[in-house]
Length: 141
Image 1 (cartoon, rainbow, N blue to C red):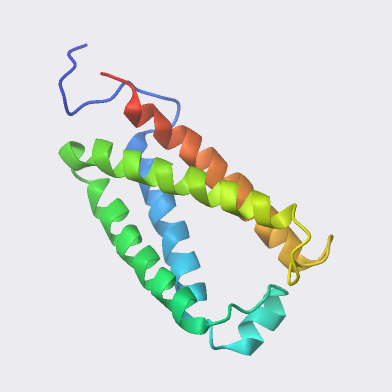
Image 2: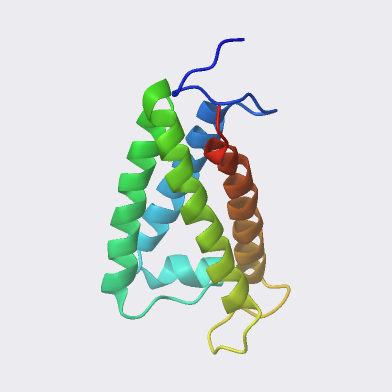
């Protein structure tokens, strides 16, 4: 098997698929954050509504941009490696932020066993798994 600077060692899950999953999740999270002013959505999900809304909406816009980049980078082997590295860093940092926040005594954390608590727990685990899967992009070919 020939390796070049643009190829990565194969894994169980192809990197383009991992980037596509990351893109879809970034799109979903981005839309939810863009809807920060919609109290009904946050009440239904049992998660705290962000205040001030502008920061959540800015992060939502950033996540939509990341989703776009990850989706299109999955089609181009030259960009796949760099996009996967960036997504790995963001996913692991996101996991750490959620984990620290959930295990703190901060006001506004969804109560244990609620839908909001499950959403945060599942989000943290998914971010960690994606980050680990994308981290193989850091290995030398």
